[in-house]
Image (cartoon, rainbow, N blue to C red; front, side):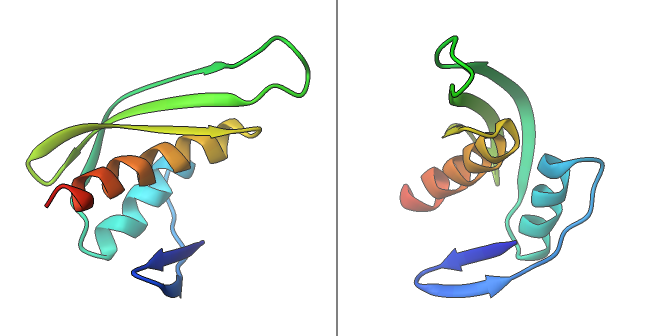
Length: 93
């Protein structure tokens, strides 16, 4: 996985029970306290080329935030939603 932090690129490898858990472990190793509390996803249309929207409620440090990710892959949508929640927490500091 490649992380872009303030314009610098870092390559990290994570393990877990699935992609969301693996990203949570990567972020935790980088000092980001994130805990996924709720997860929901749905397709944005009924076609075979539909994008998925994923919504993740996460506790980032002491704040509870929602992150949203959209992608043609449900896995990438979930990971984007996690990053969205972390970015919201960082932006509002």
